[in-house]
Image 1: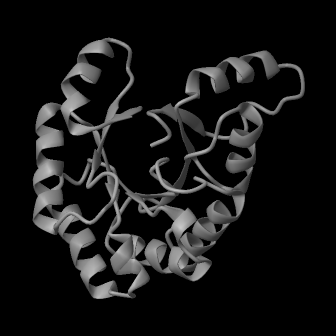
Image 2 (image 1 turned 90 degrees about the vertical axis):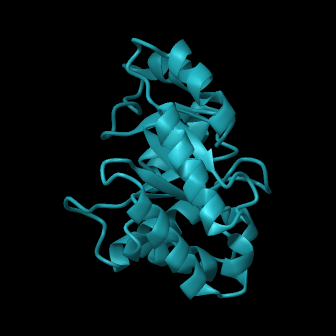
Length: 212
């Protein structure tokens, strides 16, 4: 998929017509401090415009303040307002969090029915790290959403600029990569096929969208 802001959804859909590439839209981007009502309205507008996935930024000031009830209520509200077949990814901004906060956010997302946890917006701090991805994967497994029809997955985004770093994230457990350098990564991957076999390890892929 390609991930864009709400105002770019129609243009992205038009440009990608016939390609089979979906369009994801960010919600509450990039601070995450929008009200729940604002996020619900933005999500609804994105779907109405044709977005097929929603990338919601967590209210990480609330997370740092351990306001877990407020976060869970917002996530459950967003999940309930969207169609069941619309994937929702929760952006944690892991570079601003301690491992404990990453675990807490992932756990809240899992119990709220969120489909994916995503490391970063790409606009705040260092972006994704292998340690972040491993922490998120472990938290998902700990709450029983590591497999089956309700399986939750991890997207590494921010700071992934080449095949080597993308591979590190995939091997750590990420199932998607968010990068503005997606074209470069795929070119490097094609060149590597047949050379050392590092491409094609599982159902994993790269996405484009300014590191979203």
